[in-house]
Image (cartoon, rainbow over all chains, first blue to last red; front, side, top):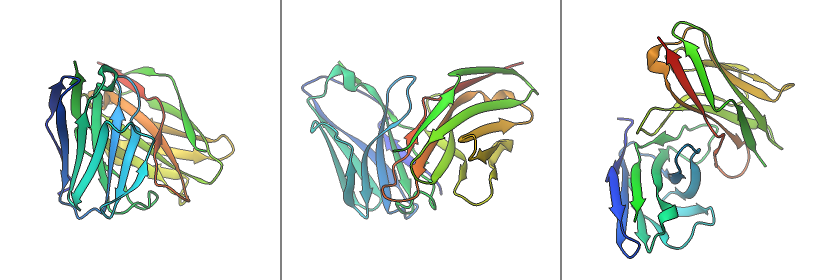
Length: 115
Length: 114
């Protein structure tokens, strides 16, 4: 099983809402990632978790709050988002964080629209 | 710092023709280079990666890429395009040391004409 699942597939939320994105993998991977992809743009790294600890935060605004409850699950909590935060949010995982050795497996993404 | 430049945001080829997608990299350390494909409304799938072993790398779906240090290039090729190859292709780079960040190019949309 080389699958990363993400829920929901689509999410529409208002600027005052609180919502969460969920990512799950059962490949035994110990590194998990959140990327943001705007339309017709490449993915941009937001966060990296390594062994359930946050190892990289690419200066992401605090209205995005990641959480890694266990090695299989990664959440992204959203609060007070802006319309410009509308994008495809991709989750990925890899066996470890040594990029040269271990490929990142991507989920299908959650398409977020902030109204 | 690492970065990649993909020349041509949109490439069109006829079915059965050669596919050539260009990628040039900039890296202060020996790079690791990747090609990913993204089909509509899907995540990214790794096609192939260069990690300083063989300079000619073979990937999935008949794609391959050659690392040329003298030209700082890592172009993606496929001898014969299929309709199913139509997708967005991203080149990405990461340094061998330090963080495991992937830095993606701006992408090339491949259209295959029947």
